Image (cartoon, rainbow, N blue to C red; front, side):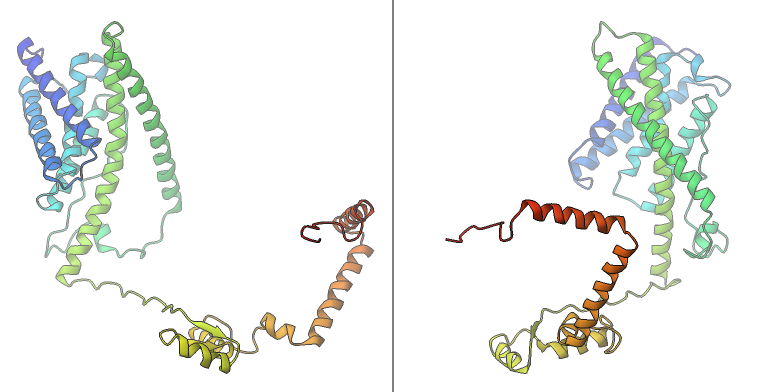
Length: 352
C-alpha cells in the first residue's frame, strides 16, 4: 500500500501544481471565455488527470478504511475528482450537455468516496442526464410541465434548512482554512497535525461546493432539455405579453391650451384633462366616470366640501366624548405650546 518515495514525491508535486492552478483560475479576473483563461483550464485538467491515473496505479486507498487511518500525505488526493469537476465546468468548448454530465460524475464520485471513508453521510443526488431523442421514457422532471405539480412545502422547507446549515458550515470552514494556511506558511509552526487539519477542512469545504454545484447542474440539465425541445418544435414557447405603451404627453387645462402647446411641440401628443382621463379609462389605468372622484371634482363642489368638514368636526367631538387618549394628549400638547409661543412667532426671515 505504501508507495516508493520517488513516486510519492512526484505525485505530490503534480497534485500541488494542479491545485495551485485551480486556485489561480478560481480567483482569476480574466473573462472565462478568453483564450488565456481556457488554456489554464485545459492545462489544469491534464495535470489532475495524470495525477488521478498515478493514484490509481499506486492503489493508495481501500474502501474498508476510514480517513482517520490514512496517512496525512494521502488525504489531499481525495480532492482529485472534485477539482476535475470544477475545471471541467469552466470549459466553453464542446457540447455543454456532455460537460454537465462529466461534471456530475466527478462530483458524485467525490461525495461517494468521502461518505465511504467517514467524512460524513450526505444525501448524494442521482446522475441526471438528457433524455435522448425518440426516448419515450425519461425522468419525471422532463415529462412534467413546470407548475403542474403541487409543491411539497415540507420538503421545500427541509431543503432550505439544509442549504442554510450547509452555507453556515462552509463559511466557518473557509475561515478555518484561511487561519491554517497562514500557520502552515511558517516552518516553525508547521507539523503533521496542522497539515492534516488543513486537508480535512479543505475536503469539508469541497463537499459543500459539490452539493451546491450538483443542484445547479440539475437545473441546467432542465434548461438544456427545454431548449432542445424548443428547437425541435416539440414544445411551444410561451407567448410574451406586450408591454403597455408609455408615451410622453403634455396635459392642458382646456382645448385652447392644447392648441397653443400643440403648435410648439408637434412631436408630443397634447391632451386636455378630459381627453387624458378618457384615454386612461380605455387603457384600464383609471376607473370609469362615476366610479371614482378626483380631487379636482371635489374642490369644484362646495356642498361636498361642507359635508366633509361637518364629518371631520363630528369625528373630533366623538373622540372627545369617548375620552380618546391620543386626542386628549394632542390637544394638551397644543395648549402648552400656545402658552409658550405668541401668535405670529416663527420664521420671520426677510420680514424687514
